Image (tube, rainbow, N blue to C red):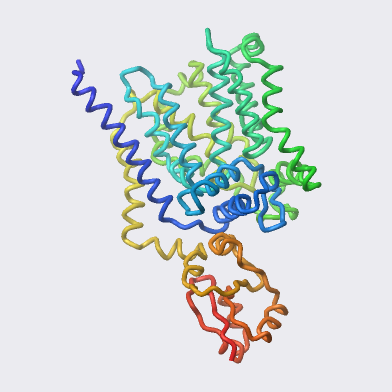
Length: 467
C-alpha cells in the first residue's frame, strides 16, 4: 500500500523531472541563435510581420510575399515579438507553449489514476523530435497541435456519454490545421480515422456523434477568411500553395517551381528511418512492445486508434523523396500514448527513461563545453552582425541570409557585382557580407580597401574604408 507521504514524493518526483526538462529547453531557446535556413527564415518572416503590421500576407522580405505556408505559426511568433521583443526566446516561445500544453493535456490518458500525472508528458516531451520542436521556429509544431485536436476530439466524441464540445474540437482542429500548414491536416487525419471506423464498424456512431453541418461550418469559419483575403491581396497564392506546395512537392522531388526552398532528394521510405532515429529510445521501446503485445494493438480500439494515427504519417510519406525529418512529428504523440498504455508491462523502463532524460543533459554538457559552438556559429550570421558596432549601411554581395536579415532587423540590402563596384566609387563606408570565394575573387587593390571584422567558415563581414 502506498502511504500519503510516498504518494506525495512519487508525484512530485515526476513533476520535478517534467519541469526540469521544460526549463532546460527554455535555456536552449534563450541562448541558441536562429539558424539558417529554416528557423531564421520563419523568424525573419515573423519579425517583418510584426514590424509592418501586415497580418494577412507573410513576407519573406519587404514587399515579397511568402506563399509556401499559411500564417498560423508566423502569427504566433509575430505576436510574441510584438509583445516581448525579438529575442530568440520570445520568437520561440509559442512553440514551447504548444508542446508543454500538449504534454500536460495527455495526462488524462494515463492507464490508471495511480499512474503519475506527469508520466505521459515526460515520455512525450523527451522524444527527441518533440524536444527539438519545443524550440524551433517552424510550421510543424502547430500542425501537430491541430492533428492532436482533430484526432483526440474525434476519439472523445465517439465515446458513450461524450460532451458535444469534443465533436467541435475535431472540426476546430481541421480549421486550425488549414491555417497551420494547409490541406495536409486532412490528409494526415481523415484516412486513419476512416480506416478505424471501418475496422471497428462504427459507421452509425460516426454520423450521430459528430456535428457534421455546424462543425464543417466551424472549420470553414476558422480557415476560409484568411485564404480569401490572401488571394485577394496577392493573386496567384492559391495556385502556388494548393498545386505547387501540395501536389508538386509531394510527387516531384525535382520540382523547379519552389520559390523559397530547394529540391530534397531523399531515399524512398526514409520517413520510417526518421521515425525510428528521431524517437530514440522510445521508438525501440515501442518496437519491443509491438513484438510482445502485437495482437492487442489490433484488438483494443484505443491501441488500434493510436497505431493508425502513428503509422499513417510515415506510410503516406513513404513514396515521397521530398521530405525532412519534422514531417514525422505528428506521429510522436500517439507513440507516447501507446507507451503510457503499456507502461506497467514495459521491460527496462528505467533504462529507456535514463537514456531519454540523459540526451538533453548530454546536449547541455556539449553546449557548456563549447564543442558545439563552431557548429551553430557557422550556421548563423548573428555573431557577424554583432561584431560590427558602427552605424553604417549593410549590404550582402549577390546573396543574403535570413539570419543576417533577422539580426540586422532587415537592414541588409542585396548588391549585384556591378552595384558593388559602383558602390566602391562613392567613397562612403559600409559593411558587406561576402563568402570566402567572393572575397578571394576580388582584385587585391579592392581588397586593400576592406578590413575583416569577423568571419565563419562560410562568409565574413567586411568594412569598406575608402582610401
